[in-house]
Image (spheres, rainbow, N blue to C red):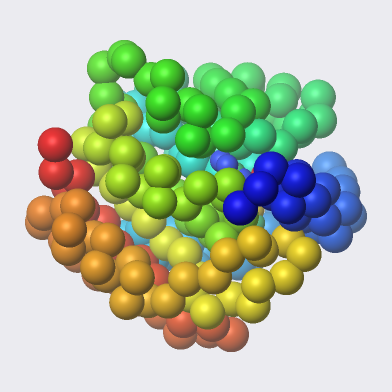
Length: 195
Ligand SMILES: C[S@@+](CC[C@H](N)C(=O)[O-])C[C@H]1O[C@@H](n2cnc3c(N)ncnc32)[C@H](O)[C@@H]1O
């Protein structure tokens, strides 16, 4: 994909979604985000107190806001407002405004305990580059993605459930699947990433 197609998709995502939700995005997104929680085998009661987590494509209202974690990080190229930056700061969440592809490429610190990715992959610039290198940044992956979403101005890509299953089987061990069906099938899994 070329850069301008991705930039156009980001611009469309901003205008048709986030800009409209304004400062109410956390409250208005949660109904749909509950699907992702379930798909990642999490409940609001899950204890993540000692976990250092990176949320890839977490946007302005990452599900990390619902937990107490240990210096967790959201990586997303979206230019989020001061309001959401302060929200993250108040929960000790670091927001890194960067594409995941670049973050992963440059990352040379101790791995995160967990990598989260939900409702993200159909938006990114280079999905394979991200998926195949997640093991560079984290030990455990929790993933939940809608499948078969139509390719449109916000979604440069679409993926099938089998695509995610193959990825998990090639790149993970101790895999648990948590698939769901709503308007689209939602692929969900947690797994240990192979080195
Ligand atoms: C539909 S939103 C979902 C946000 C969040 N995961 C949620 O469910 O609330 C998709 C997100 O993917 C982000 N994104 C797009 N390209 C990305 C990339 N290359 N690396 C990381 N995130 C990206 C967008 O900026 C956007 O915030």
